[in-house]
Image (cartoon, rainbow, N blue to C red; front, side):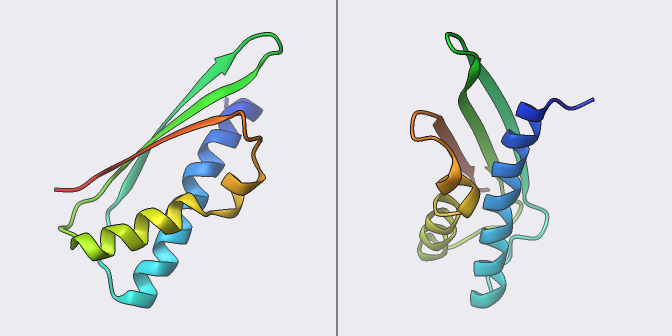
Length: 96
């Protein structure tokens, strides 16, 4: 079973990937087959999510100018904007 904090972490990754998908469709960028690996790290005192690590792995070659668009889109997703500023988001984009 997934905990509520697991769902928060996966919601962040899902939102980022969705926003990248919108940009990709609009600009003709191939991101089909991209996946996200998500890791949630809990903090103490008070107990909360301290860090979310997301690694986006792309299957197709993407030009530098399009990488900039996708990465900017991911970092401005509404879920990210809704999370507390103390939560560390460690986001990596892996291209072939």
